[in-house]
Length: 136
Length: 441
Image (cartoon, rainbow over all chains, first blue to last red; front, side, top):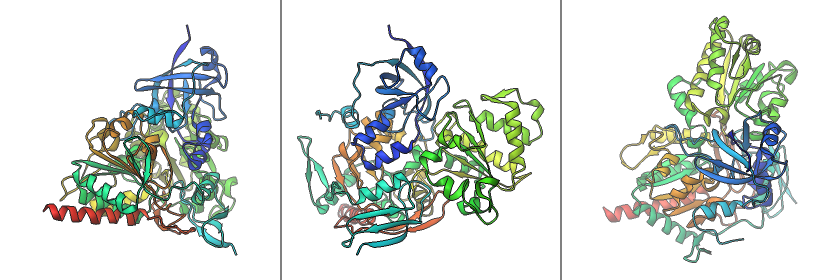
């Protein structure tokens, strides 16, 4: 059975994401910049996750497949980060503590190794969520 | 001859850099070179002259495809749907000039709907704290010329505001700061070891979501109760808290820049509230200011324009028509979406499709969805109607408010080639709504 662990997720900006967003959200650059999760190496070892392989992330409000990397901007053990954007928002809880701002940072997720799962494109995720996806 | 245009404004982040040099082709249709701009800004100007730009409104057909229509048809479609909707929501304005934001206010007042801007999912909690506790702030020019201690708390300008550190805070040599970075102390408080933390003198790796406790510890030290704080607070050792507090107390002029790390985490506005209280405490012993790291180049704009129009900066309920009302949690976009309260959605100058939590997108998509945006984005690809407009700062000028609420005149560098501006489009929609309202009356 695949190891599972509850981590604390944050979603924030990255310059690579900013550049890719201006190139276009359907671009390869955006896909490469945003469909990754940055984790601590210790957590990856515990979960049996190899660097640059896909993982399954589940939160109280959704799930997504992303690629696990260690990243230059490191997280401490127990913390993980998906750059803001389409993949992150599959799992961000919409609860706002009555302020309007969703829980973009600091929500529990479970992460498990899923090397055989496929990464979906931004369009497939968003159009798929609203029943408009027809295939590439 | 290619034309060089000086002092152009960059339409990306809240730095609103206005020293960009752009070289355009003879016919004014292509950007040939961009100087004094970050990697992200470069892409915006390049995108402005891309051959792939959408130049005509597109209406979704029953088979799911998009068909080109005229601006007149798009305006009629939008006005009719706005007129019919009981509680339409117009949301966005991160990438719109103030003229467009004023026209949006007119449109939604005529439609009797909800009007909200990106602050609602961004620095909205900061607004709430500022209402409660004040805002001892300054301009970025004062930071450049005076500040010798800089704190970045829950913000990562190396990534989100690429020229912030070089233009305003850490590196520039100002009037009283002639030695630049050599005479400044930089403190970064962030749960990650970010690229900003990499250039700091002190990095406090706070436990995520525990910023409030760390603020409290600093306040205790400033109030003279250092002996009472525990050995470790929010993952930070007491010795380090005391050391950093000492630097803060001895600042000639300090500024705290705070970002999404505070407004998106548990506590929301309370994190900002205590940051302001700490600034107030520090002002008893030194000179301190605080500033929100606003995300987009003119996201401070709607807060200013709508405050002077309606009295509130965001989360506006204009459904009563004769008076405005604001109550985040009730009138905020994501909360209304999750309660399925709005029956039409207009996404303008932003991308709710990519940046709202997906359950909110699913709710909004049950109803007519219009996207007004120069680019193909997630919001345009699920919209019923996509209306392309000029890019402010590229095809059209206008007033923008920088993150420190300083207004800056942006200018156009490219020929708009028939595209309408946000202001022109929204005023045409408002004109048509006025006609429909008059007919009904």
